[in-house]
Image 1 (cartoon, one colour):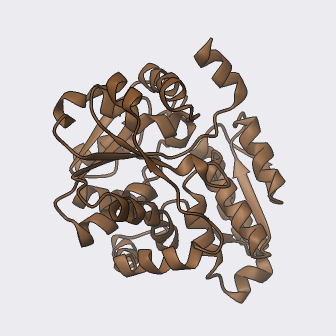
Image 2 (cartoon, rainbow, N blue to C red):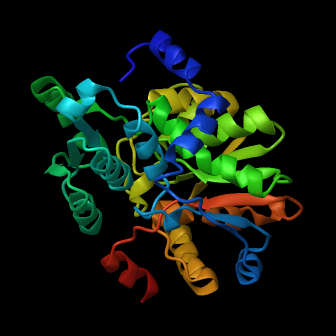
Length: 329
């Protein structure tokens, strides 16, 4: 992880639109482009027209696998020999595990106790070694440095990694290619790699596009940091949207967000759950909490978007069955 502003600045220099374009070519043999869809019933339900990028249709059910594939396609021989380690609530871990399996690399994934059991099972199915540690994401992260020191593993950080930002930025590039008249994009923020990928694409190719991030009101560390102009941590991240549940902002994404995002909106858990139900009934797509958060924010702010060409992302569909039963009952 970067320890100084200088290190962050050096990492930022590595992020470019050419990196996203290279990633698009690099991951093409392994991952399909996902559809960008619109639904009249959904538009009617939320109060404005919106185009949905279906990252839930990817092999792991979430966008992060784009970054994992781009990363693993470029690892050094040392990394191939020793393996990689990642900390996750699920989707980043699935990304790293599947990509590592594809390229013959050992993977160790650390999750907090009580993590989504179905995401844990999915990660194990891709051949990773799964370790439970800590009460939440940031607690689980504490074990990683120990594993790096003891076993020589390479830490694949979910945010402070240009290869991952380039990889996930490919979905924003696909959106722009499919919807050239877009003027607003709304993206959920957990670690922040996805919105940084969008910033990289749109600031280079269509800078007038408004970029709006979304956080859970119960896990708002990035929002608070953005408002304060400096890093703010929270005591908890108690949200049903586990992909958004980080208490400590990641340094590289936060620095990019603070410079370039146009706005950040907050949503409550009940608004996310309402949107999960709306997506099921109007599009027949299952969204996890983080996957529904951006559309929940669009619904909440639909009046300000009625004359805009809006795109958003269903970033993941890995909702566990117990939570799904509770939401739809």
